[in-house]
Length: 261
Image (cartoon, rainbow, N blue to C red):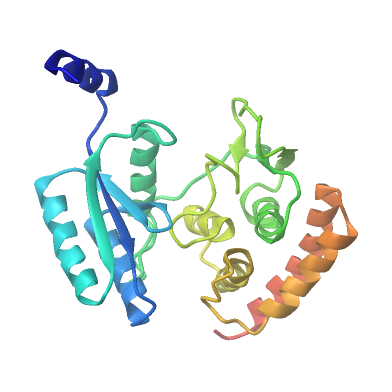
């Protein structure tokens, strides 16, 4: 491409410059994943994919990421650092909002949340049809703790166009979905500042079933997974699945609420 063509292409983008930290960690040592996640949060990066973190480009940010790259590679991992502009799938404004939310959320050291999300009651909450564990649990969480007057709407995975005022969860480009290693239920708990040990415990159960990574190893997980699987196999309508699942979640919440730790 000639110089004028290059200038035209650059001008057509005209967006912000971002740093992407793309990494792959070895299975051992176990602590490396937690250490890496904490360091990236302290640097100010936010996860946009499971192993891809982003933050605004600056010399200081690049130096911080380069130091972390050396540490990861010393443990047998691999890292690629990319600088570029967002073109499709995520806008500068959306990434700014994700970074603001991450800064406001409690960190691994238990820091207090400065701001939390709030919604007007009676909003329409949209998710994909064919609900399973994360969407069932998230719908229960929304109606019981976030928006008791919530109206649920179920749409196909493809072809849905968001209407003004609708809030999406656990679906493509949703306002509330998986963030980093959190499932949608955990994202909702964090974003709405729900400081409740029972909800945290349920989130860990839902995470291990939905993400299939056995991160938390809770003894209740297998039983809850079997109950949800039974509900899904016995009932096709999404609303019925959520109603049946909500009854189970009410009891599970009471169970965790009486336990210590």
